[in-house]
Image (cartoon, rainbow, N blue to C red; front, side, top):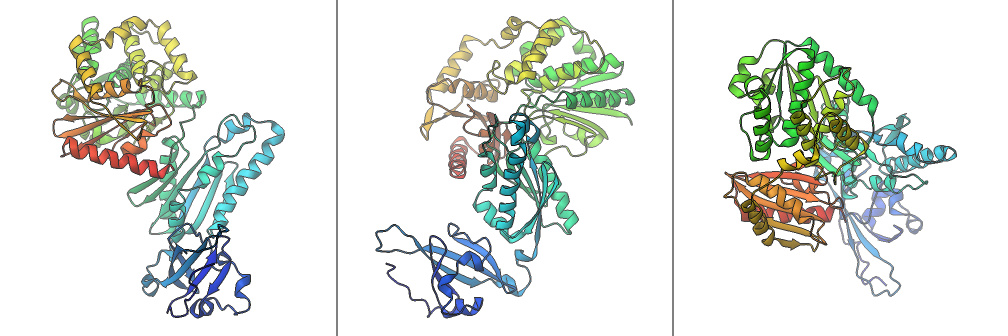
Length: 584
């Protein structure tokens, strides 16, 4: 029995419910608010009176007769051995109701896309197609109706969803459970069905909120899908995104992008190619690939490179020894400014973030920009690109660029060192073809092999000194385990390229039995770099995004400014714990 069921002394509406939301007791204020007759109240459920009420949520909002209430729920101690649960429910009038600022009056606009509709249908028997579609529709409609929203199917795999903005807290509290419910559908499909949800809020008009929703859904899709994004002005909030990206073998898309790229190159006066700061082999390899494509059209072209990092030193030295790239291809930032003309085309590779480009100012000075990248999209991205080929499922940017060779309608010859560079970029980003490899990855690797790439020469590019191996061993020895399945280590900073050492050690730590994710911190000038790796079960991208970084589910990184190792270590552990709470 419930120990105490008094409540008429309260000056606000109060009720007691059981685990099935049946009303057991309600005070006079509650009965007045809902016009409940004393002899009828035990026939009612609380969710008959308050839409989308959930006893698992401690604080939620409700609109009752044009008044905005905060609804507080707390469990009641009982001496009942049956296991039945009872809850106190208090309704407190929200002050925002008096000044019309309550979020209940605002509308959230959302777009819902099924990420892999065609692929899922192809994987099940034809007779099951109508039933599978009906199940998806029913679950989405149930979610919408459960919070008093309106959902309309726009296309076979696209929906528009409009609901009161105050219900957004409920969706956040439940961590957008619709993502899990759709993923759990099993009709014999070979892989899970996933949704992407883009929500726009606080726009000045409904059209404005719809623009936010479109931007949010685009970002969700470019991050690999299976997630919900909320765009509120310039701010994004992310939920989900724990599934591994589906590797779609979209040859038509690649061919269309190749044709569009060739048209832009032919129309421009000259081309500047730029990757990210601290260039790696995927970055410089893809730059070499684009350089060859541009030269096949006969256009003037240069690669903007300010610093030869340890990551690319071996390849760069071989490149300038065996070719004339040093004299004709590479220029620094100052020389790049002198190359800008009215019709210059800028091609950005291996990043979509202006802030980490080799020369960020170049993005603002050139009108025509092309972006090729394979990293999962973050909140910051180059918005004014005339062509974007952004594929988070791809192994590397070198894979995307090599794909272009197949569709540009030109038999582009490659020197051995150029083919090696493209293959090296794929090799380093896939960790020797162990991560993020799809059918395209092996197809383009075979193409490069036919063009003269050699795996032994590529392996030599990765060789290190015995002293460097000793440093790696020292860092590995400093490792501590976290949550029994993660490794955290602190790397040496008195080396030429501390982030490279951290990245290599984080790869090595995954070879330890029982370790599913690794994090290595290092001091790099006035920043703390964190290199994160995972075998797939743990999404290190989500963890790194909490620290201002990003990347992929299995390979990611972050930089923390103006702090020390100890503070960064504390921040990392807090981010991991927050992530673990979210995925429970």
